[in-house]
Each structure stands twice: as structure tokens, then as C-alpha cells.
Image (tube, rainbow, N blue to C red; front, side, top):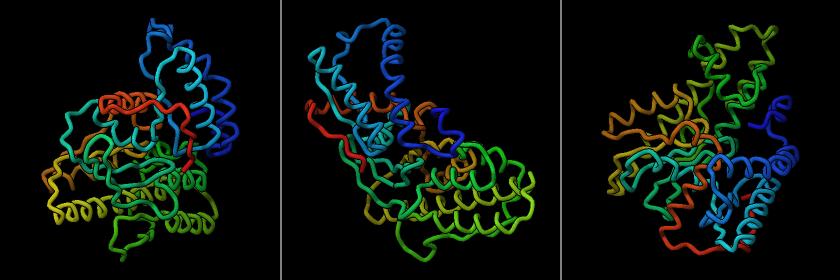
Length: 302
């Protein structure tokens, strides 16, 4: 969300790290003032330690480790993806296990969340993440970064049937994803178009968004049938990550969930994209499981 990246149409890792370094001390000080607490009032410190951009991870984790050492309190490294997976438990009464679709700019995965600290990966993307595909296609058709909200806006007035886009891994009977083929197909369509009109942008946005929703619907049906075969009872399907904010996608998945007598749950809107609140919440949940402080944990981009 840092404004520096908008002119490049995507995140520039070095700029992200530098921006973290410049503003982290200032916003921490302001937050403590807003909350009317001091550092010594904090019982446990945590930071995202991966996966992610190594520069940003190093800045955040080193800063928070330093604070924890300064006030002699424990430091807990938190996995970025675990933060997303547990975020729906913040505002929903969840029934473990639940199925979770993690849809971000860096990851596209399906998990069974069995309990806190216990996750089963069912499938993931073999190439581009879903949010990355939205951003790259937005850039191809001249839309601003981040591309997801821009495509959703344009798609409202577009024709979902205007462009026939491929369905990657269509014959592959697995829960893995692929989005690079769709990106390539859009790229070829854009190159053939002599003039990129607003109508063209609306139609390509609608066609792309609909294709992505269609892929997610098929994967959800496949996942629910697989879970049934394993005799696992699921009553809730969680959608997490920035792409879960797309109403067209979530509304379509709700229809499938209803057919299987399941409900769709989401975290609050401000917890959908990458954020510190979900990392703090994950730490609170994990702290009840007697996790240990690990000040020597090294950030891991993978």
C-alpha cells in the first residue's frame, strides 16, 4: 500500500525496505501514544518473519526484536501465511476444522485449518499468485496499481463473455492452480487491439475476473468432495488475503458453499490484505499454546 510503488505498477523490494526503515519508528511511537501505553506495558512482542520480501522482513523483525530485548519480554516469530489463516477467528465463531482459501499477491493456496498450529496444505499455485495475476493484467490494460480493486470496478460494466480465456490445468485432477496462461492470453489479446478503449478495458476485466472466479469455484467443489471422501466434516469456508475482498469472487463462492451446506467466513476488511493486526492476533492465539520465545529466529523469505 506504500504510494512509492504505484508509478512502477508493482512492489519494488528495495523501496519497500527503505520505506519500512524510515517510518517504522515514527508509527510505533504514534501508536503507543494513541493506545496510551508504554513499551513496558506490552507482555509479548511479535513480527512477521516470513515468507515475504527479505529486506522488509529483516527491518521489521530486527526492530521488534530490539524492542523486546530492551524491555526484557519474549519475542515470537510469526509466519505470514499463518497470520492470514487464523485471521477469520478474530470476528467469527469458528468450527475447527475449516477450509481456507488463501488468496494474496504472493500466494494462492488451499488449506484445512485443523486447529491453531495444525494446518494441512491441499493445493497451491504452480506459477503466478492470484493477486499477482490481477496486478499484471491491470498493468497490461493501463490500470493503476494495485490492480485488483481497479479490475473489479471496470468489470462491473463489462461483458464476461466477450473474450474466451483458457482454463489452466483444466484436465489436472488436483487442487493446484496456474494463472500464467491466462496472463499470456490477455497479453496476446491486448497486443492485437489497435486502440485500448474504455469498453475494451471493461470487457477484458470482466472476462478475466469471471474466469478467475470460475477456476476458484471448480477448485472449491473439488476440495469439498475430496474432504468428504476423507470423512472430514467441514461447515465453514474461510476466504483470506487481499483478493478475498473482491465481491464478485466471494459472492460466486457463497453460492457453491450454500449448495454444500457450508457458510463463507471472512476476517474484517482491514485484515484481508497484509497487516500487522492479523500477526498480533496470531501471536495471541499461539501464546495460549505455550509457544516459546525465539529471539534468534532468522527471517525466511520462503
